[in-house]
Image (tube, rainbow, N blue to C red; front, side, top):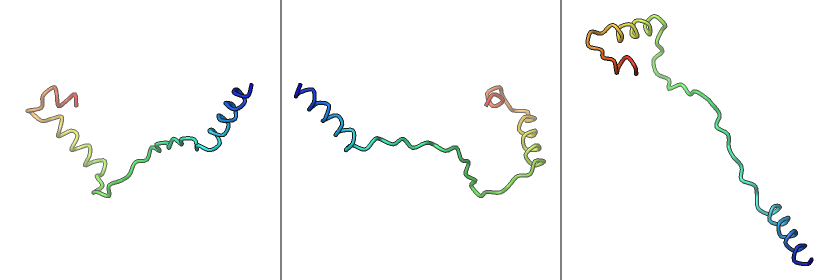
Length: 63
């Protein structure tokens, strides 16, 4: 009986003295790099120029 009581007391003390491990959450946040801003028209023309190339292969299309 003394053994079980001392074991229970040891568990209680261990839980109260050892801080619980805290898990930090990863917050989804997109950080801007401060680079040049591309307009929608510029993006569209660059996108179309990429796919309209004559030397484009299947691998580049799938990327």
